[in-house]
Length: 97
Image 1 (cartoon, rainbow, N blue to C red):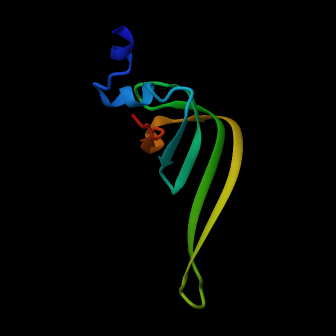
Image 2 (cartoon, rainbow, N blue to C red):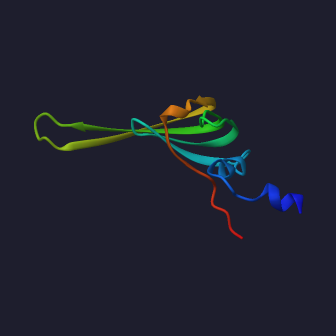
């Protein structure tokens, strides 16, 4: 019965607690996205992620044609501290029952 209570979701941060040691998706301000293994977090959504893939999307306007040019760049980072005030969205891994 105690195991069922540990798996219960009663508050929003419980979803994040259940995602410890699993890969999560984090959307940040300024068009940055992270996918990595959640090692730790706190109530401010400061997080420590491992094996992180960062994707940065930039949109530029061509001076001659005024067309939008969308560029994405990716990089991998072994460990990353994410400050919670930049977090827009946290998505836990998909769970099936």
